[in-house]
Image (cartoon, rainbow, N blue to C red; front, side, top):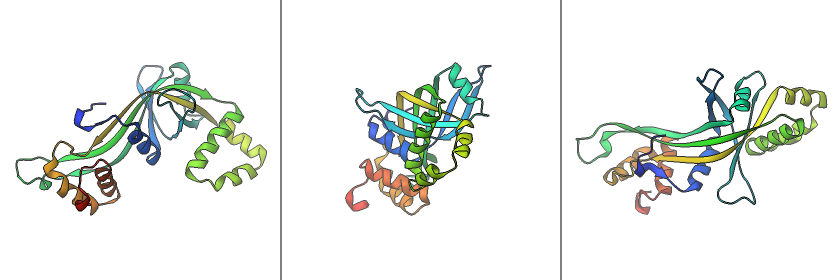
Length: 213
């Protein structure tokens, strides 16, 4: 993605935080004609123990009726995008009037290499990872379901592991315009949930002083 240097984050912790807080991702690859195809799927981020560097794997699945898994089998390289909170940036936050509106946002792009998971045991483990992230108490209910029913459900999906081979993280928060930070932070703190989330990120990145929080 386009990344002006002032908005590029090189701290993997920022990307991991966004991917976990906003797990509904866009999985992008190409169909058999070469046209882009997108599936919107919740993905579970796993950090791989015992591997050098920041080894990250995204776990997910799609319906067997969704042809996207076939495209991944044929062309394993794909793109995954995560979009965090975003909000309007008003020119009113600047001390002068020679300004224009803009939009602040947080985003992560991952280049990935896909491996399909289609055996029942692997898909069961994958689903339990998703359950553990979103609703741990449901794990007991899943284990207690009739075996014929769970077998049918597992057959209806195809799982995949997406190994992250390249990571990009953009945190666009007007970092290069410090004269706007205090007013922008105040507006975001008084705004909706997305705006308040951006205010928190401004604090995390040290764009506002303790007195302004």
